[in-house]
Image (cartoon, rainbow, N blue to C red; front, side, top):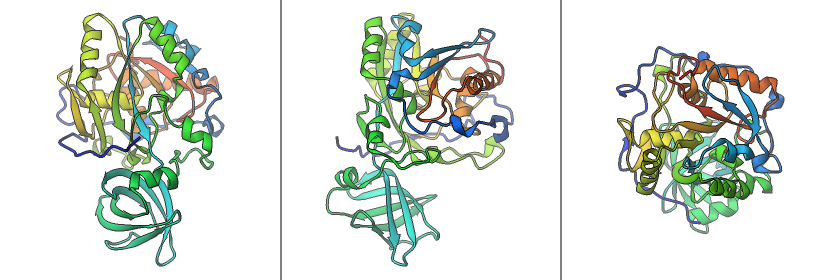
Length: 376
């Protein structure tokens, strides 16, 4: 499937400043710190996608419940709508060396058209415009310009860049998976509904859904819709400031189509619930919403969602367990309440849930205040 190339017609803001539903206090990165035993970081997927555990997190004071993802058809209601991210991960990691001999790691963040791409470079010394990187897989990459922490590269390879990457690139597994990607990862680090190529990381909540589960959900009367949000290399970057008001989010491209907007409208009108499968879906829907109304939108977003921000686009969220001090943990805390999320994480650690990309999942129901306990 060809990789998408896209213009950026407009974008959504990097911070919450001026957002009509934002009244966040002065939060700190350390407010989202927790300790996780290293052995709970999943290093490989389970044999069956839908066999992953599912922690049910209703608003307090209702108790948590330990289920499996394959139980979702009985947990949801006819008329509900599940919204998935249909982005597809590209083999975006390359290796090479500079003319001086220094090793270089290339992580493509976005294809720019033709043979050009925007990428992060792992190098001992930042290259200047005109520098060339000899690629281990053959060909060269020439540095054209710098864009913040990214570089604009021109690839001199024996095929179109998108076709060449499929053969030469490596799958960019997250850094906490401490092994080399295998052949199985080419399948398992993709959702079964991945269609629009362009991401450098998987929308991991969607990894739990297989064909039998999707068929069971359809038989239950649960609708399915899709957005596209190409997860960028910035998703691997830590928050580097303590005061979260100073953090600038990375940019990601998304598309919320008119058909999905109509699906959401009809679901709401019929009394159904909208359930996001993953934080990327929430990010896309919130970026495409104005005054609580969803609209078609294609462009970039830098939206930063943390406690104090009122998420209005979804009623529930299926999501994996997220890294300490990450913006994804901040988002789910905005949705269900920070105290409620941290209670759920303590429960998950005690019950030996598997964490992060290849780990288990949660089903969250939103609370009224991200700083409280999530009670409605």
